[in-house]
Image (cartoon, rainbow, N blue to C red):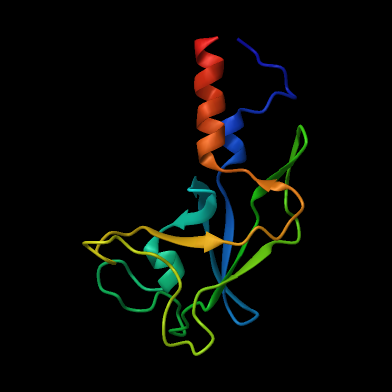
Length: 145
């Protein structure tokens, strides 16, 4: 069955590119998605992406031992009935101003032994950040109608 070439599966609007950086220097790229909980948006990605360290050995992943202090993400936003990627990116600081404490959340019991991390996002755009919750609910409703 051939789908209309303009049809986009809603789930494909969820994952997006993350660029890891030290100040303005690009280090690497990864993927992530947004999860909404209690009216707050969170970036969900791997712990090794936010820390810049190997998930098992905890050694820096970058060839020059650099670790990120910020991320730039390129999620989708919804404005009315339209959805589009943010082309300019959103910068997310990973550490507090003193750089002595990271801002991301880790597993409450197993900490960084679980290679998943989350960080709260401020809504800095006029549109609504597209999160996996709303897309999964929409897909579920579509399947049951």
